[in-house]
Amino acid sequence: MSTHEPGVHSIYESVTGTWQHIVTDPVTKSAAIIDSVLDFDPSTNTISTTSADQILKIFSSRQLHIDWILETHTHADHLTAASYLQSRLAKQQSQSPPICIGSGISAVQKRWADRYDIQFPEYERAFDHTFADGDVFNIGHLAVQVMHLPGHTPDHIGYRVGDNVFTGDSIFNPDVGSARTDFPEGSASQLWSSMTKLLALPDHFKLYTGHDYPPADRTPTHGAGKELPYSTVKEQKERNKHVKSGTKEQDFVKWRQERDASLAEPRLINQALQWNIRAGRLPTPTAGGERLLRLP
Picture 1: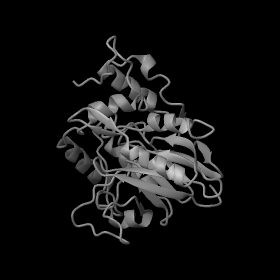
Picture 2 (picture 1 turned 90 degrees about the vertical axis):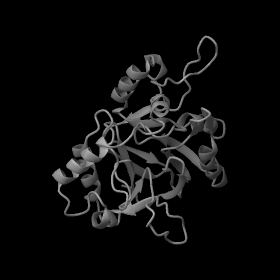
Picture 3 (picture 1 turned 90 degrees about the horizontal axis):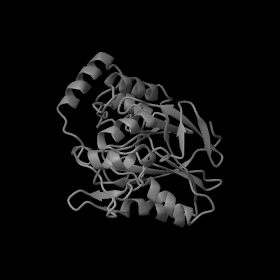
């Protein structure tokens, strides 16, 4: 991989418990944004950009150049700010950063487009580039390796940069455990395989998570809040409440499936899926000029 380690700036969005990550090459100041958030209030059906604007503030204050806007998967619990950030950055730097996701997105788009009656032209070119397992690209001088990590969703990928992996929802912090697998073509057994793939990495590797839901008994560390952007492979193997060392696959799969059967749908699932398969672009306006999301 790369000969030096990235700088990482993680921003916690507390309403949906989402971590937004900015990965930088300290030498060239090139950077990538991973799993950005657009704020949505379902009580008023209004969008705001407070969370995404925090990314833009770091971009400006540190004089970065954003090379990539990356998604780990099609999120069902928050709206991506990918398109908003791309449009803003296109005006502030020499190049518009491409919006990228895993190559499994096409099947996911088709499934949800059928459900919400979204026409093909609305999403066919939503993403500028898709990655397959094992693909390698660069953030400045940093090499990034793509890891297919299915289970939570079939299109899920992670990004390995040096001794760090940005895992999305493929593993959570040890006292949170694992993500649900009851979305279409989700799989508890595939999630197990993805998690064990991550836990096979060297003990010192940092696993940056896509969400954090701190339990009440978590103690804040190093003067920070309870929210933690990452844990090490060693910590995960020792303490992950669902897959720590000694856990058997069949026990995890059984528990995960039973747990998922009791869960309600994510609060923003309908809005998020329609928005995110378009990479955060607005729906085509109606004859009356309205841009609508469908609720079943």
